[in-house]
Length: 128
Length: 128
DNA sequence: TAAAAATACTCCATAGGTATTTTAT
DNA sequence: ATAAAATACCTATGGAGTATTTTTA
Image 1 (cartoon, protein in one colour):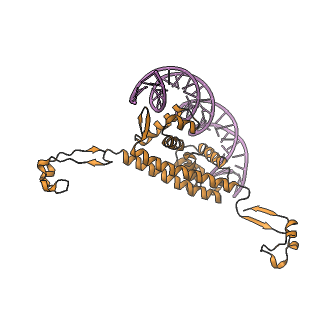
Image 2: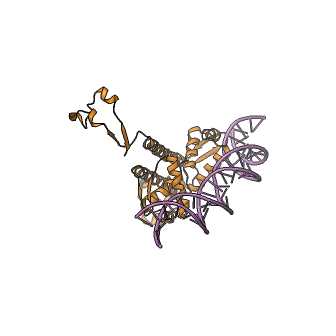
Image 3: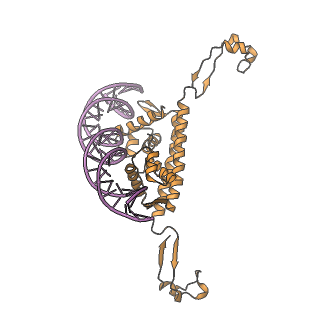
């Protein structure tokens, strides 16, 4: 099955043009990364990388796949970022309650409290 | 680590509103799917699904994650589709050679061969 | 000859399956 | 009482590491 790991490793290879360095970047051994790249090529039925012993170059198909992989990885990061944001205790819809006597009638439901009022407020945070 | 599999299983749950049916859809047992969903929620630090024994509903965060997951899965499929297309023996840039004697000088590099000429052609496909 | 990727081999983590339990209606 | 998800437990697959080999410039 096509996996994110494979895409991550492949993008690392694209960026470094070097299996060893790419492996270091993603914190695995060079053989581990090689295997994942191999599985990816097998999975897609494509040769993604031209190996020339001294240097590495992506095939045209490899370039296209890399572009798409990068996009997918970005969206994955966005998803994670959204989750972190949503998980934060200060996120979500917040209902803010103020002791009525501190807020002049005219300013209820507005942002018209004096500084001293604010200093004496009871802040009631309710996660939506 | 956040995985493609987790997103697939989660989207299946969204679509079926039922762990068991979702599991069947993705061809794994219900416990296997439950575990992956659990891992996903743990990974994201979010509750994605409200379990109410008789029914299931996504949380607001779950809905948002599902939307993003669907988008990612679609791009993943696009990537695979592209790969299949690129892997096809008839894809890529094709250079077509014709025995000169069969093609009138005037029509070289054009599509002006007679039917009989075409029938006698040597077709030379060279994958770019 | 040297640098880099591929291969061989071993080990452990984890994904998945079956059986069972828990929970809420 | 029943339907559905969670948990427990076991097994097997495969992913990762180390050591080594192959390849080509």
